[in-house]
Image (cartoon, rainbow, N blue to C red; front, side, top):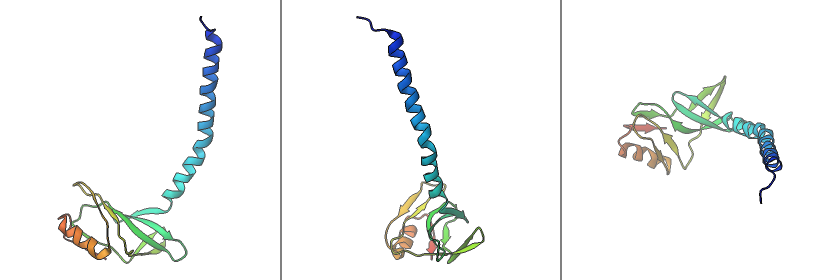
Amino acid sequence: MKKNGLKHTAAQGLTIILALVLMLALMPVMGEKAMAEDETSFMSDNCIYTIINTSDHSVRLDSYRGDDRELIVPETVEHEGITYTVVKEENTTIDIVVKRPGFKIYGKKGSAAHKYAKANKFKCVKY
């Protein structure tokens, strides 16, 4: 019992083509969402900040990408001609990526500085 190979191949080819057309149709929508998320973050002085409020120009420090052993978080940071205030949130999570393996700090801002010093990655962290 051998099926007609031509009809079988045409049906499979049509299925693949429809799947590709659907995937290509959805790509701009997925890319637009990813671009919107990237527009809320920017890098300044080896730190990545996320804009959390555009009306009062406030940002949150999300990540540090430098090699210094002392991190001093500024009160304000400038991006594209706008001065943003760095918000010190109660629960601080900062992703640290240095030449040594990165680590994350969870907890209140007072304990975050202690954990940095304890991890022997930084001499101090100042807000």
